[in-house]
Image 1 (tube, helix red, strand yellow):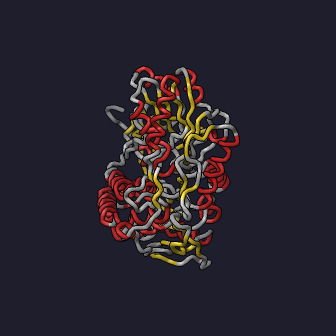
Image 2: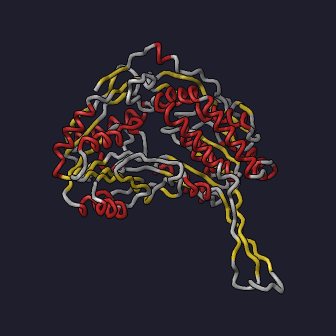
Image 3: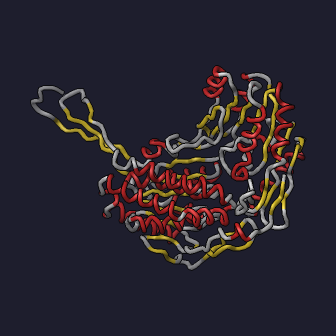
Length: 501
């Protein structure tokens, strides 16, 4: 493993200037009512990037009022779907035109690799908007064959004002995943980005206005979860909440939604995904995939395959290959094109990961490699691999959200299915085998929302994404996510003297 924390002029040129720091409400950038601001921090250094307007309940009220007015009396829900499509396609084009700046904002704000944001996150966000733009004029109800002299049909109508509470690990992609289908459906909304990564959401709001999204339709209120996020969840005039984040906070969102106006919620929560390796695979290839499955985005991904189960016949060879590959893994400045892994998002997450590593050592797991901080400043952590991990150890049960892998040995298909399911989570799983029967059996037996066979992180705009058990409910992506922002209304009327029903 190589450490590269040096700053070089050629890649520092990609660091953008922060243009937007105020709340975006009803088409304008405005200060918070309280005048308060909070600091957003560069995880490369721990230094302040900018001071951002701190929205709270009063600001959420303003934003919700703007969204309600735009929904009840504005043009957006009433436009033909084809007109919404045109505006959303323009929005996607503007995202691509500003790809360098958006990638730079996510890199400096969240420690994401600039190269990965430029190649993946930002183009992916634009394509997600385009995907849902294509659905805007294809929202249809049904004509019903009634059992008596009635004509019946259904309408699919936008659900209303939506509150989106998005996480810090994929600020751009999550913004598009939430906002895209809601806009296509004709909803209006208030977006609360994570306080750790507010910068790109404000930029997207600016681009949406340039694209022609009417005032009040898309509002962005930056602030803290316990104030701004809680105000969205409990607001009596918000018709739905979509939240991605921890299971603990998801429970609070659901409680607030129930205690207020019984608004429906979509929750995409934590995970502790199994990555299962059978002994008939190409060990070198799958060892690389397993490493990516844990270390991608510095482990800050809810579907990280951090519980790696390896069949006993290839276990030792698999560990050798893992060690070979992790030695070439470069941890460094996210703007450096040679880096594979940037800093953790903030000091709190950095310290949390290091505490889990100490738990692993104290509970008897063997530290195969890594386990230490890197560099004199910033929030960098070595890729960390534990072996001799028992299923009841803390590092095997709890979501770490960092570059920490637990490798465990198994014998039989039945054993690994039981152990893979022995978790409160059910977000994703990886099944690595060349045996079709095993692949089918295991993928149908694991209680998780996404199963990847001989691949990992195989996301797609057409592939619904969500969890079982305490990983939440509801789906992002795919047409299922569009359905979540639509109400079904049934209409029936009598028919007289018809020659048929």
